Image 1 (cartoon, one colour):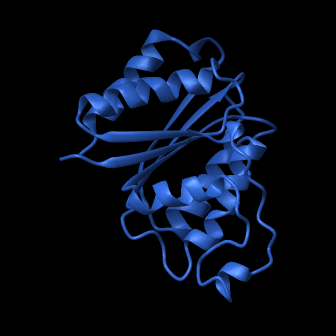
Image 2 (cartoon, rainbow, N blue to C red; image 1 turned 90 degrees about the vertical axis):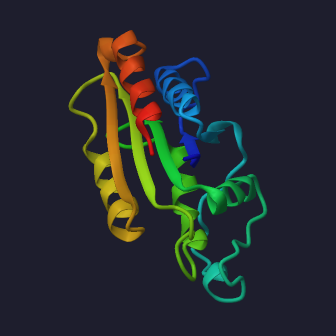
Amino acid sequence: MEMKILVLNGSPHPQGSTKDMVNAFKKGAESAGHIVDVVDVCKKKIGGCLACEYCHSKGHGECIQKDDMQEVYNLLKEAEMLVIASPIYYHGISGQLKCVIDRFYSAAYPREPKNLKKVAMILSSGDANMYEGALFSFKGDFLDYLGLENMGVFTAHGSENKSEKKREELRAFGASLR
């Protein structure tokens, strides 16, 4: 059964470890017949949430800012699964990806995206003990607040980054999705 998957890649490095993991996941998911859209958020012009509440008043769920986030909103409306991918910077996801996630505030008003049911996370780091902040956000934002089904968290650190073993793990995960 075909599924629409949206991957938000928060890495500014087009040939980096996070992108390598995203490519492996995408290859596996597409081999199973899924449609995978990857948005490299660092290449987009997306401002942070202004906390103006326009989306919850006059905007009726639409953000007042007109930037590249509109592309993400359109893909989010159709997505059945979301994959958050980021390198770890100061124990958290990249700032560019954080801006995108903060802007989900308007997309979840007056209700969550109707098709979105599942979420996974892909993280790369130089050290194994750096994931706490990103995992806290993943749990709070996506599992608790949006009520999405946790499909897994995939991490790579140090020599695991860009390893064939890690690529195979992500290809297999993508291929196993139903």
